[in-house]
Length: 298
Image (cartoon, rainbow, N blue to C red):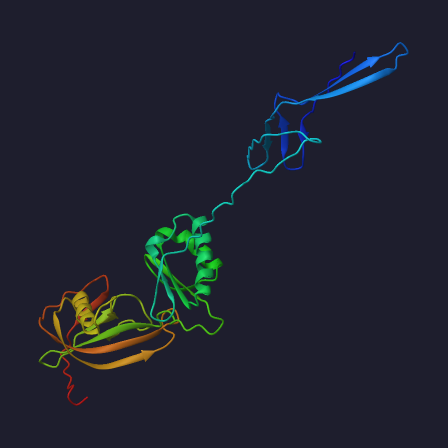
């Protein structure tokens, strides 16, 4: 009687690796032989454990175990893998009065990669909702996010010392968003006393007209009234306190500083003090000439 045993080896497919456990199916053959060396009868028996444990591994580190009953070779059963849940995040924003969106600058992702994916998803969402203009404020601390927004199609609108404003126009039509600030607003102070004498100053910085005497001038500050700016400039340059009487003239010029237009308003002021204290950082000199002017006839 002769006994033969056969067992499986490690099997490998293109994407899965299969290795049987220690309990391996075996085939046992029993035969009766006559004196001529020929078999008179054979009996085959298949011995297999009730269950076999298999490990399947792939690049996704998936391990599956399943009961196995052999039939004709090894059967590989794909495990039931649930689909991953995909979460899409959008930028926090609120609607403006013109069908556009203003992005909340306080909620921007700090990571450049997170900002890029969230911004792209938000733009697609705004397009589906039919939004028009998008306003995006990026602070100085997050300046590395600006190139990402530019790459997605945003344009510079204006900048301040601590932030930059960018815009994105969605409709396939001319942009209706207001342009960046187009004007500078300046003042000129026409300070005249009861003797009809006018306060004049001489600029400290070199210019094309050295030695020229002129009215105190300057630009108004952010959120400052025009008349308040005139009073402030006179005080800063000459130390003279004044009160506002009326606006007597204005001048409008184009392509002045950085190709912006310029508005200058001439304000009539009355001095409340007589002593002049020159601000040497701004002007060269200041005085009240003894020349009298009759403004009623002007």
